[in-house]
Amino acid sequence: MPTPRRPLPIGIQTFAKLREDGAYYVDKTGQAIDLIESGGCFFLSRPRRFGKSLLLDTIKELFEANRPLFTGLAAEMRWDWTRRHPVIRLDLAGGVLRSEAELDARLGELLSDAAQAQGVTLQHTTLAGRFSELIRRTRERHGERVVVLIDEYDKPILDNLGDAALATHMRDGLRNLYSVLKAEDAHLRFILLTGVSKFSKVSLFSGLNNLKDITLDARWSALCGYTDADIDTVFAPELPGLDRDEIRRWYNGYNWGGAPVYNPFDVLLLFDGREFRPYWFETGTPTFLIDTLAQRPWFTPDLERVMATEALLSSFDVGAIRPEALLFQTGYLTIDAVTGFRGRTAYTLKYPNLEVQTSLNECLLRRYASDRAVSEPRLQRLWHTLNEGDPAELREQFHAFFASIPHDWHRNTPLAQFEGYWASVFYSYLSALGLDVRAEDATSHGRIDMTVLAPAQVFVFEFKVVEQTATGQALAQIRAKGYADKYRGRGVPVHLVGIEFGRAARNLVGFEVETLR
Image (spheres, rainbow, N blue to C red):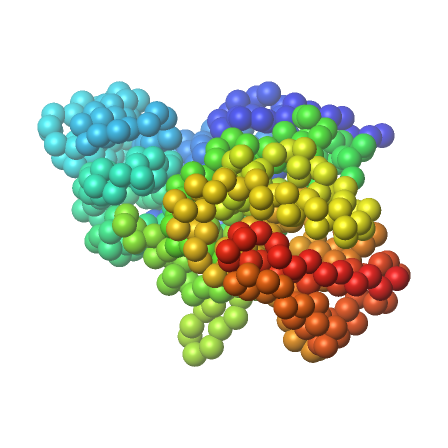
């Protein structure tokens, strides 16, 4: 007998509501207990809409010993339900704070609400004093050490990254609050802070020497998110009618050193709408990220093979944000491979999945080539041309695309002046289509600038930048290096495409094609 379908927990961040509604639930309670038993003070960074709030609420219900909610789950037979710990939960996700005064007022409200929930009265006036008093009085009243859970600890800073001075004030105000946790250690049973970014201990958690960052700990890679096994078991009733491989290609792949996971938000909306769409990306355009990449400027083909150390991925602070760290912490790049030597760990990063690859590159394309040059009909036409294998039409479309970039945009935008601009635009244009695009594609004879694998076609591209007139060197290099050999055995046409960009013309001045059938 098939398993009956359940309500989809779209947007539900409250463990009690999810359980009482009989919604689907991927059991994370065993992992939560493992975490609690392994220490007392933790920090976890994950991208937005990844289930961090639900995790915190699950831990809250554990410590408050609400056993009926855990019937049939891993925690039911593992947790000591005879002992209750008071839980102080501070959630900074609500609203956008635009001044120090607003931050202080909001933190004051959160502390007052927590005091009321615990049945205690606060007399101190400073925020740090009130937080400290809240912890002490809560322990006195309940007779047990206190659990502190802080959700979206960094949101007031992230909301103001475009204003470095204000973001710094927000950081300093939060540091003042979080410093209390070290001073009140004797009264605390368990601490977990979650957020999107990973600010350095020095800048935000000064003094919290016992704070353990589990962001890149393989044991907790799947603490938030759904694994392949979760999709196939828990959500089995939702799978009929959907291509399982496409679900994996579109939404799987986030990795923090252990098991890869899906973003729950994407999966739940897919099961609801039954249509493959960039659900997660559509909920928030990464404006600050795009601005940061554009200012560098960034050679977009490198996004497929970013190399970074653990220290670099953790180097996140106001006014000193490395693009690699920003891309990784916000979920637009994820871990592909881990290597190490002499105690040093290095990470190779990649796009987690098709959703991120296509959506991020479309955003970058609009910044690199202007909104006016990018349109949905143009993207759809290019996709069909590549699939049909029409090189002449391909040349016409790319020439028209580069010609549509306004002249003033070239003059006023520093992006257009850097050497990798043309290849970056070309790469993002193709990557936005969702095709298999391989930059710096390794062969036994050298590296192909770019290979595009369409369903029934292969395109091998070599790029050159010339001053005015074409030289024919791009196609000549493809032939001389035997780049096509790697793909001859596929049984589909292989198109060798030599492209030369003219600095003066700001467009293609050479486009030679040879097709091997």
